[in-house]
Image (cartoon, rainbow, N blue to C red; front, side, top):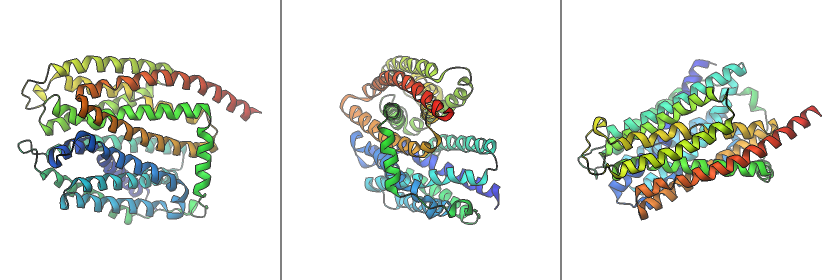
Length: 418
């Protein structure tokens, strides 16, 4: 088994899906321009992506061993390649919905299979952790690359032009390349091939028993509210830049990359800070600063609507300040995931991971739809002021979660030493 080729294949798989998954904000803006749909109608694209992730994730954990990790990844890449080709060949809003449903379902296959494959090719826990971090860094590079890739195909002089759909030929090509590379790369799955997959009903039962616990119930509320806030901002930032700050469409998409970059930097820095500071106090500080940024940036946006913008150099200050919220909301999701998993015994980590995927997907869908409806009814500034509501809820929920988590961790340690 050529380990380096397997690793390269996994990196390329993640890179492709990073671009496609995080293109939803860009595509929301473009379908409003091209197909004349409302902000409310465009917001359902998030649901097509996230709900398909949630639904497929229920079954993948049980049956991916029986299917085979390599075969599951090849299936996902094949589906996405075809879906990308359909976008420019059949330009329509329904095709866009189909694309995100295909991307979501395929990502569920990819994520489970990639994570499991890392275990097959990593001889030690240190190497496992090292490659996992390396893989996640390429995911963020894919997110950043996507903004500039899509903006390169946008025609600012003709917003109704569907020329931007040609970007999907490029993405289909990259996905096909990932498919061919994986097809030509042997992967030894003998260590897990003999294991019987658990029935789906067993996994569902484990999840339902977990969510009945107070600490888990509060955690899923935290995860739901966080992703609701994050996706509401991320999915609608290109539209906010275009319609509220009056940036050219291509620049609106490019400047949304500041949010992705600040989120990546925030998580990198939090990895060091959390060695010295309690996760609870770090997140409390981050949420307060995030609220302050909202209250600082949005008044700046209201005074920036009249100026003509041609590039980064003359973009209004609000376009730079508001996306910096990513620096401060970035540590929340990894920190609470780590906190809940470390409070549970190892045999419950699998069902807990399923709950994380499902409630995160539901939160992302809800956040995008709510933001879209508020955007339609009351305008972009009000829609982004709405982010103060989940920030306030998180301040309360994280306080409760921290207390329950400490109690749960104490119970687990007492049982392990009994």
